[in-house]
Amino acid sequence: MAALSRRRFAAGLAATALPHGAAAQFVAERNKDGALAYASDEFAPLIDFRALVDHPVVIDAVDVLDHSDKTKFVRVRSKDGAQGVIIANKRLWHTYSLLDTLFRPVLLGKDARDIQRIFDLLFRVNYPRGYKYSSMPYFIIQGHIELAIMDMFGHMLGKSVAALAGEPKLGEVAVYMSRLSRDTSAEEEIDIAERYVVEAGAKAVKVKIGGRMRINADASPGRTEALVSGIRKRLGDDMVIYVDANGSYDAPTAIRVGRMLEDNGVAFYEEPCEWEDFEMTKQVADALEMPVAGGEQDTSLPKWRWMAEHGGVDILQPDIMYNGGFIRTMMVANIAKTFGRRIAPHYPRSGPETAPLMHFVASIDNFEGFMEYRADQNETDFDYEPIIKPVNGVIALPEGSGFGVQYDAKVLRTVEN
Ligand SMILES: [Mg+2]
View 1 (cartoon, rainbow, N blue to C red):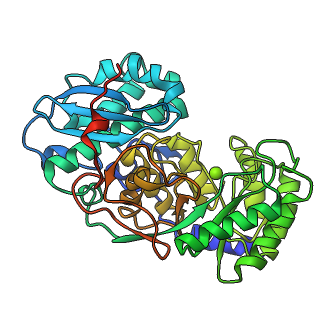
View 2: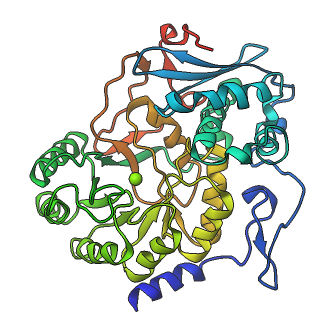
């Protein structure tokens, strides 16, 4: 009953309709009869780059910079020499052909001030019709390019990306140390997590439970319960603990595990069930008092609306790169806000890779808790400044234009087309 009350309360905060136009472009709203209808067919950009820049910013190049086996960058350049750079996600290695064949031909020669509309038309209308490829591999390419363009506009305007979207709401961001391993024993994992938490001065941590998409099998017998109860005991009652099941369970098992998590004061339960099984995940969210989080693979705006409206999850976790970039993820934040829900973005990165997410969380007002920060990977094979790492559990929003990271010129030399 308590769970139902809490969820009704969240729904009670919701407005009856999505914000008009820009906030959730072309995501249907409920009309007075409860039918889902488009509020408008007029395009309105979330960030009006034409108002910010008074001349065309013609896209001249979209390049993948092949720095090393470990590190690549995506760089966008304009005809008049502006550029923006983003560190590539490893999944670019496998999805690069979509950049090469689908996105680059459409973008070259276009005015970057219209980027939101260009992506929208590529997805819906223009050949080769992005929606035919729709899902994470498509939107991760859009995400790389869009984030590089946001960095470019920031540099052009001498503003941080957070400031492009309005007044930044945070000057520093508190992080949780995100662990990604299941090949450790519970005891080893507690030792490792404690070491990273202490080193960073973090007030929050996330550990992996279950067996990742393995149909109720634990990573090793008894690991989940030993890990959760053990880490609570070791790190104390004040530590914020998140757990991530990566789609490990069916609903009855997930609910049973969830009761154990509640007994140990876990703050959210990420992906209890297979990510595409919205109904099963909702059964878990409905049954438990604790918040269920999810959405890292999700990219569909209408599905985000369904999740937010119906409580498919309590906390939405879009990834700014997997979900198609900064602006498209702001739309998800706005959809969530409409239904009284909060955002805890997925982004297990560290060091300079974290900068775009920091600007994103500084741009929204329904950011939940602590920002994800990968515990075990602070080393880069290139030089950059300023150094980004948590001190006393927080990272200052990088100052300077764009995402606030300057890369050693050497890393921007090699071009792979
Ligand atoms: Mg996850």
